[in-house]
Image (cartoon, rainbow, N blue to C red; front, side, top):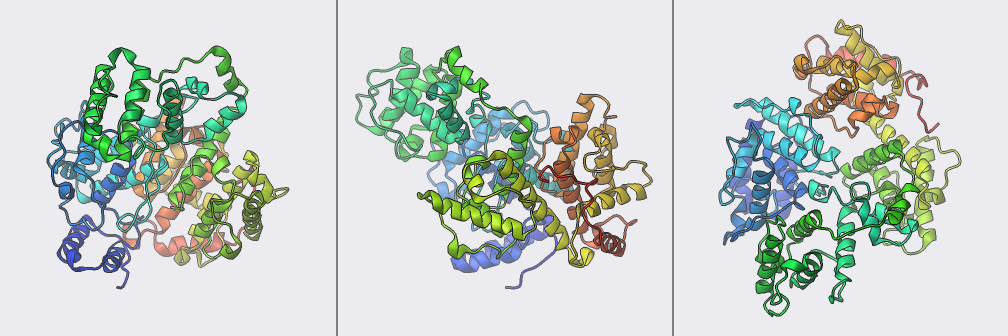
Length: 615
């Protein structure tokens, strides 16, 4: 089937959904995949509300479930035209998401007209159509991710405004750690939500009680929240007569015995002696939930969810228990381990950016820490292949699990070799440095890889670049030219120009590329730190709302992190240049942009524009 190009309006999507509904039942799996692929040739440009709902539901798969009797027919969860696009979700899980929404957004002024949602109905899917609910739920997951001033919140939104909200939701989901790949055909999403937010040493330093020395502390810091939660659960279970090791939130807890022992350790005053005596797992699960209720632990799952081994809902249940009563009482001398560990805020922010960027590419494995998870070289090779298809020699690559250290070094040696092939500055960097987890060198490599990807995307817009190399200075001049042509006196001398900290230049740039994007009545003067932060958060949300995939934080703008300034400017430039001619402001023609880039692309990289710390 011929793949279609260009943007789809919501009307187009509705029409095609109807076609899918009409023929879906008569197609084979492969035919269905091909059909959907034809409808969604470029997910970055094509958005529909149910795809976003899928993103959010997966993002909050670790959230919470609602107590109650699940509906008999779980396959009735989605009776919409996209049934073949989305995985069937149980009524119990749907109820948990609805309960989560009702609980966390009950006081929202805009949504109170629609809440509480009836979990037995499909009202949820009507309410999410305008994208407002999804955007607000992103902020529930990670507060402050979206500047709510950027959300279109009129009572009646037109298709363009709804699409903007959904675009803002998608790009914000990626920016908080979701991997969203080919929505509509297949997707893999892994989010970090507020239930797991406290499962790190910065938020809960008492977790250091789980380890014995500083070396173990570093290992603990590198673990994903789910692994820390399992380690905490087993730590508490050691205090009881329960001798098994819990390795997952499914089969290992479905008999509810581990839960009974855990709650007896944490809240013995509410224990029921008959809980461990009963033989029926379902009855035991009910008694466990009664115990949780008596200790005041909020929980949404049912006894049947426990017995069925629902991993999402069981993880949420344990996370709720941890939040309510973790049973940790660390001594001061134990916390002193943390004082010896380096706390470089800049390194931490850069690690976060690169981690989320890598995860957004849809590699085979979700990474939780670039310094630990990239050491075998495999994910780096996959990332290189995404950025420059065909560049990796997979015949000599070693696929995980890799037990022999020299096999990891072989992978990382190829990573370095490819980097040199791509003209990265890799002085004194060897494959073994990556295997050893050298933070400085890993960050240096990842920055050059991310920058290369951005420049390649711009280069591939052949109608503008004519296939010539695009450089940092081209991006700088493009941005200054756009703002200058609007009549503004603002400009940036380089990507480390301290005047950028107030955010005014980027707001003017965004206003030029899409005149309706910035509400200037919401913009501050950018004088005080608070005003600068307000402008910075607004810039990021507006850029994502347009369709820019960016991973920086407001602090990166306020502190003028030159790497992030380059990526922000390049992302805006890429979004603008790939728009169809008719959607660009009338004052700027397509030919004008093409000739401008053709002239600039003969330039070489100007160190005054971008002085990478790599060099």
